[in-house]
Image (cartoon, rainbow, N blue to C red; front, side, top):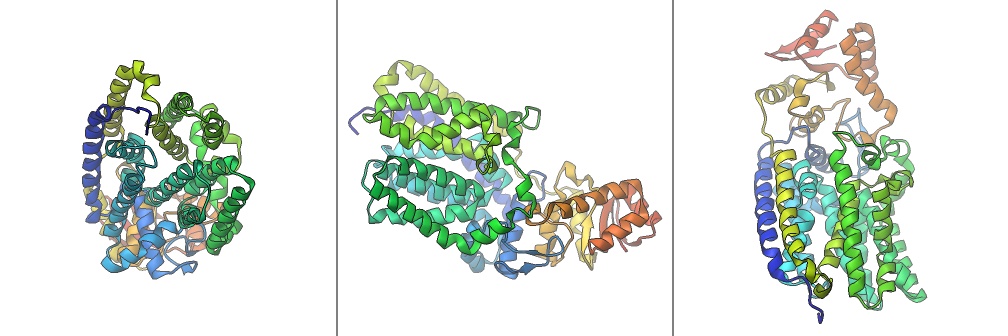
Amino acid sequence: MNKKTIPDKFLYIPILILGLYFLFRLINQSKIISVFPLDKYNDWASYIAQLYFLKVCGFHNFCPYWYNGFINFQISQPGWYFFIYPLYLIINNVQLTAYLSLIISYLFSLIVLYINRIKLGLSKVKVFAFFLLLFGNAVAIGNYIRVGKIHELFGWFNLIVIFVFLIIYKNKKLDKNFLFIIPFYFFAILSHQNSAIISSLALLGLFFIKTFKEKLIIILTALITIIATSFWLFDYIKNFFNTTSATIIVANTLRVINKATLNDNIVATIVPIIFFIILYFYLKSVNNRKKEFIFLLPQIVIAFLVLTRLILFIPIINHVFPDSYNMFLLFFAIFMFFNIDFNLIKKYKIFIIFGLIFFSLLSVTLNIIFTANFISHTQLEEETLSMFPYVDDKYVILNSPLRKTSYPNAYYSYAAIYHNLSTAGGWYPSAVNPNYINKLENLENILNTKDCSKLKHELKELNTTNIITYDKNCDSLNECGFNKKVNKSRICLYSL
């Protein structure tokens, strides 16, 4: 590029800070290969189990393991599972496959940025800085490495490819090579509702600035992709409103500020503000400001809606997690930042240098404070796992003190994979009707009130005979006339 951009030397310390911590978190999370994830901040267990279900139940087939049986992938997006399934068949280790998919998604994303660095106006140093600012920040590490939103991370790899296509063709006439965007748009739709909506919004920016003939090519591209995904998409839309997914507005964390939502609200305020500040200087750096503004219009609108919280009231787009919109804005903020004419911001260079270092240190500090490392099993977790060989029918786990250290639904994943056990519960509530989930959750209240006849009736309604519970609840089941099968120090197994 002719114009001078941010000097690479400004990025050395942030790369070192973010890079070393990013590697540490990847190494720490590798414990998942040998230790099944059971902790309470954990989506890994759900996706690992569903990958196993793809193998044993197939696609769009009845799967008996959760919720007294459900249609596999009727609601769950199958993109990541399809992508990683061949590797799973080769190595035949579901936990190792899930972890390797994390590495593969990161590696592919970095490769896409690296091989397109010239077209994106990036030096080699800026490529690594771009990657770490996007994926090495506190929110991204918490979501993708710690919590394990691995199917959404795979969606982000496809989003990055799509964004690169859009940036390249922003100043280039659409040609036949543009059609190579289709497989990535295909997987973006199939990977997660977030990536499906964000990719479509981003595509609008290119649509707005192109000629009529080129608009037709974009429309054709979208139609081909929708037709290609129709084997899953149409059934998903048809069944969506019969499940808990229709009742969940994931942006609701922005509705109120409390201890649980404080971090989400802070990030969803700071990121749009940073986006607008960088946008201002970026537009001053380019020749055709109107074209760039229109191209970035979807991002500008999203930034405004997130900042003002109006995003809560707009259908469809309020079904995208705020963190995903923050990632969307952050990608383009980083791209614009690395393409600003440095002469325009040279007088702020001290603020930029220390700002980047401060951001890196703050990100690592917040991770250390709020994002725990991989949590191994305590004695209580091991005792719970030891119960499953004695379960001989459908079961539920009720009133578990495990919630302090682990998540009861994660055991439903473990028991399905390693003991071939089915349950009235599960770890993907979006797959079933809200009334069923309410009925299931109400079992704990019934046990607390010791309403024996109602508990037995509800268990029969849920086709369940085995109950795993803890402490004083064991005495309650005994008093209700349940059959004691196993009783250990704090845990017991009873049956009807």
